[in-house]
Image 1 (cartoon, rainbow, N blue to C red):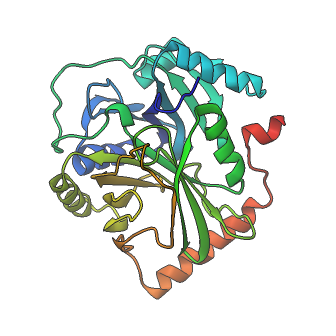
Image 2 (cartoon, helix red, strand yellow):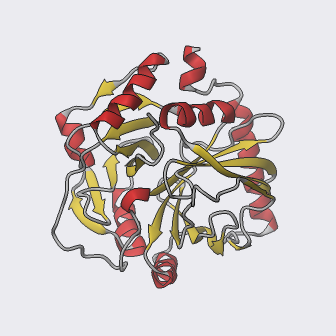
Length: 329
């Protein structure tokens, strides 16, 4: 049984001490619908799912879990069986945790880099009209977007998504970013060009980032939504990690805003869908065909950024990186 085409990204769970700033970014900047707001938790809608992005109070300042919707119970059981056959522990989420995520129930495994990979079939539905600054977001069979991460163990990360979820390689990009040469692989789980992007330094494997996730992506319905959200985020004082530009592989026009937790959120438009009958894997020598210029691009900033990335990369050598399949072989 193939799981390809039967899995998509359902939600992202963030932990942060900066909930007011997160609400400002997601509601007033990106334009999402606030479905719940308290001192301890925020939840946002973008479509008929009751919750797509959840931010709860905590110290991680990172994405701590991603939810993946499977087509039906048979597909879920197939994924669970594959995990157990490889010695990967599977735990059931509590009713309270399921409610927090906006799903009827879920199971969880510890994925690459220790990021919780949570599997569910039944999202809680919400039919009340959306009140958003954006005209809409692209979800459906392709899911709510994608995640990107850096890793010292790219082959093991690819194996995890390939062996458990039948992920397929869409293409690869090689480019020098922030002073290091990165090789980036783009994996798809369905018609969306990619649901997971995996970046690794060439040669000596370093991880220059503090967070498990480098960015997560959501897709706006129109180019006008991109332009308006970009202007709102700038007006609200959020730093642009990369201004509006376009990727050559998935054709998506997007910008990357720095979140209150320090990782990036990409808002894109017009992402390419893969035609399985005609698709050919390709390689690119640039992550952007135009644009995506850093907001802070002076010499002093580049020097400080590169020094910080290198220091974190060296520090990462002192700590083993968790990889589910490697640990249990």
